[in-house]
Length: 114
Length: 115
Image (cartoon, each protein chain N blue to C red):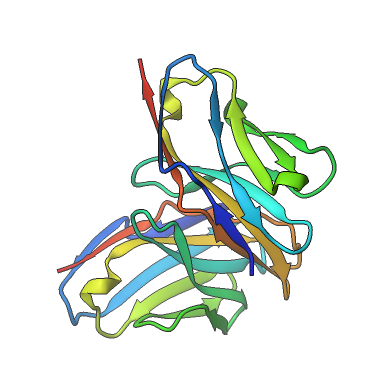
């Protein structure tokens, strides 16, 4: 069966520091990968998605970037964190090429920027 | 553009009572519809999904949802709520595009269960 791992679970970082959140998927190949951010009362906002290695699409302009160095690895980064980057970050995957494939989520990372 | 509305931010029900969480969507074609549940500090777990066919879909944990095209609704129901059902519930509409799943989520309904 497929599993998705996200780490770290929680992170406290000062303003201006760099960020690296990692997500890996097991049990499937060539998945679509996604990064979402969740803010209280605002649902989930899609930040990035990837349909293959090195292929990243950004949904909203922001202080963050994403990379996919390997087929089942997705990384969310920032060079300098802002206070507004605080939130709950969720990685997800769906099956490639299947338009009706649901998203499957990791357990998330709670990021607090101080 | 697709959108999802969950009109109830917070709902409180007694344990053993029935539950209905409302969801309305906007999408030009036949949508893919999902319900997810999230416990505090956790990721989202898929409860059920609708793509086509029978408009009443069964999910995990005793939940079901009914797709009503005429009302653009996809309400989630459970006949008898358990205390462990307390969580936040998200309705979502998806549209396959370019090989990936473009999913739009509602803002969620937080369910409180009282003994």
